[in-house]
Image 1 (spheres, rainbow, N blue to C red):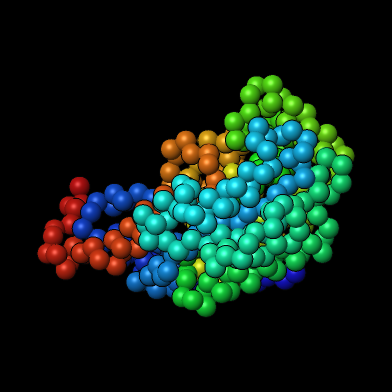
Image 2: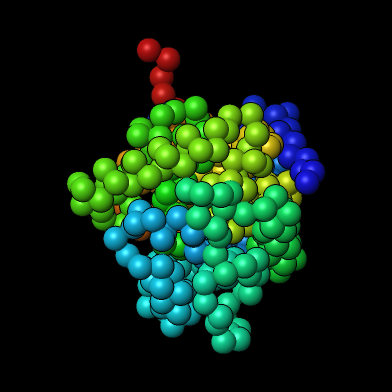
Length: 347
């Protein structure tokens, strides 16, 4: 599958920096907000960027690896949480509503047949992936199908006027998928990539590490083949996020990247199209072991570090007001000239 993500044109950068530096504040006083204002100005190629119809996409899918005891929760929780999303009872519902974000819940491959629901996008590829301890999680055609579904979902959001998209997920077992993707794509030992997920005990964590090490050894993949890694270890929801992210960046949207699993999807996307990173705001550093290493690997600084490890896109939704603030100060804050405020003396 072909994507073509261009680096944002840098010709406007000096003007944007001048505009930011001449607001009524000391140089750099708004910290990361200034960095984000510059980034979004370059993405949109304007001195007056706008964030339109902010939308959270939450992709849900089940994982065959869950049958190997890598999570303290049963696989049925994935479907139960999707129903909770649809009833408005989850954390992401609260935070998306609080911040006036549209929320789209996507069945990418949950092991449950949902009743038709206007608030659920049916993009199901299958009833969960296979157990990658023994065989690839999905076929390459199914992986490509999931990527294409992600493209289609984003296309509809852009057609509705959206230019800023948050990415979240739900799927029992998906920290195992993300850990294996991280191990392969970052060329790290699996033991350095595995965390407690939804709350494993010390014994459970040790068993999870043993199981995933066995899976990594079985498949023997290298970091050069991102698609093979995705189809071997990924989930339908992770593959669908990859397609959604790539297409959103290709269409010059701003991407709000959530936590550990979402960043694993981004690692795959960045292997396929490195320029995608120019379109990403990394919203927080998860408390899940390995996420900081992922962020360091792509040389980015997250906006928040508040010990979140829930997933669902919650970190992206919580950080969105800061992203909005970065655009608002650029558009609305007075300059030294317009406010008749003296600038710093040259001392």
